[in-house]
Amino acid sequence: MARKKLWGGRFAADEDPLFKEFNDSLPFDRELLEADVAGSLAYARALERAGVFGRKDRLAVEKGLRAVLDEALRNPQAVAESGAEDVHSYVEGALADKVGALALKLHTGRSRNDQVATDLRLHLKRREGEIAALLDGFLRVLGALAARHPHAVIPGYTHLQRAQPVLFAHYILAYGEMFLRDRDRLRDALRRIDVCPLGSGAISGTVYPVGREELARDLGFASASANSMDAVADRDFALDFLFFASALAMHLSRLAEDFILYNSSEFAFVQMDDSVSSGSSLMPQKKNPDALELLRGKAGRVYGHLVALLTVLKGLPMTYNKDLQEDKEGLFDAVRTVDQCLRMACRVFEKVSIREERMRSATALGYLNATELADYLVAKGMPFREAHGLVGKVVMRASELDVPLEELPLEEYRGFSPLFGEDLYGCLTLETVVGRRRERGGTAPGAVRQALAQFRKRIGRG
Ligand code: ARG
Image (tube, rainbow, N blue to C red; front, top):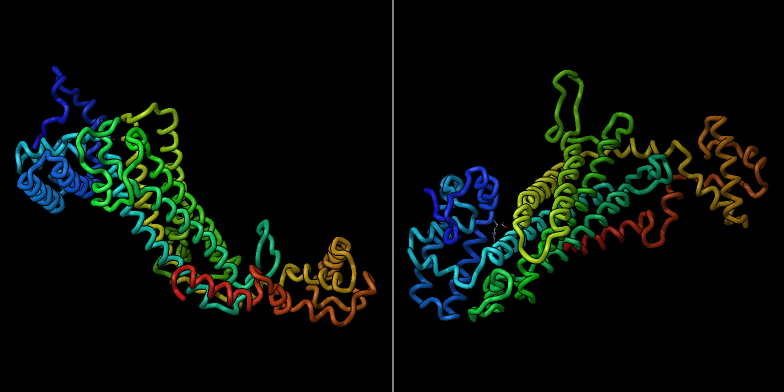
């Protein structure tokens, strides 16, 4: 059914169909339908407080709105095909079919400007809550992965060169910290989105005593907005989400990249589950880590949405401008993408298998205990800088002979410094190298055990 415009009064000529297609937002803002109905339900109660609606009117409008929502949920196709300009026009038109003129009264003192800002906040706040729960779930998956392999060691890398050995759990908890910061960012976004613009009117506030604080509370917001112009012009809450989403996507991408490398036959530290891998149409031997590659790749579109909205907002004159309608598609896509990525990441990291023996043997190559040898000389009184240079030479000699430091004979060591004694070999074992980093934040088993316990507390699992 074609709907009447909300604003036809001052127009003599009809809309150009091309303009209609260009201008209409219903194809994407119908995602806000539930929020729009919730906003209108609360606004009907506010109008009763203001004396615009009698009790009976309000009850009739409420009943009508619930029926509109019901029908829309049952038949979304009918909404899509209604030809309405946007979700607000659709709801108003469908309500008018049920309750007649009362539907038109519902817009008293309200503008689509404060309405759309309210709808978007309501909708995004709910989705943020859902994403927070998914992120909590993923943090638990990471905690469980670390806990499953308390003794595994892995080479730690800088510049993608083997640097120092660390516990696998320590490495996983490094990502845990990153995702905990993402959780903080999301909580922050949730705090700032919790403000209700409704009752700001088009720009300057409302003449009807709707009781804005009550209206805000009725909709589950913590407070009513402080400035009517800011209320209709602001989309910072959407940026907050997009920045959170970008940081999260970036962290997922880094984690995915590590595991793509570790899953390759060159590393072979981990093995992806068949259920989240795919094959090649040509090469029968292939098993590709597609889930991880997509987790890495999705970051691009999320960043894109952040930059797009920043760019839309830049240079916008106060207050509402139609440019703001461009806030939605990217935001909705970012919400869906992050939601899907978190679900996928849970699945992938629940099912990944860890090849502890491969990781351990990789720590034996590449002189990962060289720092420990320098510390040995420091303990014997040599300044660290000097020890660093000397051990560099020792490493050069050992690689000439193609042996690890623990297999270089004592006479060789003595040739470099008389400080070297038989006890140096005790310093070079993996257990010593890992086990001596006992201070908070280090990789010694005791420190990591404590860190894991702390981590579990922080994610809400004591
Ligand atoms: N579809 C519009 C949007 O998303 C709703 C607000 C329209 N307001 C206006 N004054 N034309 O921004």
